[in-house]
Length: 172
Image 1: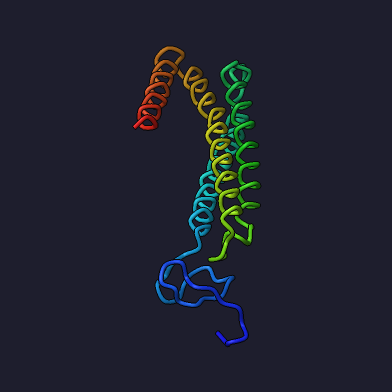
Image 2: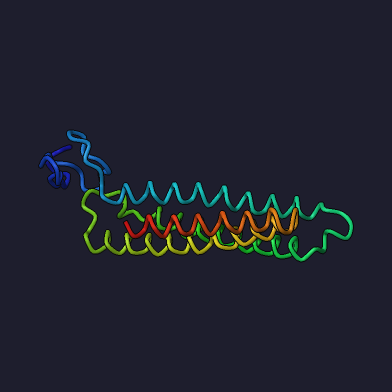
């Protein structure tokens, strides 16, 4: 770095770094937004898989022939998975917009900007969780298609148990 270039001290080791640096070359300190950016990247990855699963499954359900194609459970499952996939595509779009925020990549990211980004990311994660619900409903109704009592009830019990475990983990 030349003397004319602006610099600022690294928050961890006080080594002078360029204001737009993502990482301190001496100690490896990363911009606080770097972790948020990685989280958003993981969210995009998972949402992409779920959207692909939902849309591919709808195509598979559309190949069912005969009278069973109009079964209530198939229609509800397809509708839920289409909605869930559209929600996931919206999550991907918003997450990519947030990841493109240049403040995320700077060591000197203003605290107010960082806090706003954390709040937006938390809101996006909440919407991601809500977007999982159509997939869950679709899985439950698909269980009723294959064996109304056995599979449907087993899937429903498994989903309730999973929700209960998530609730317990949230409390701890």
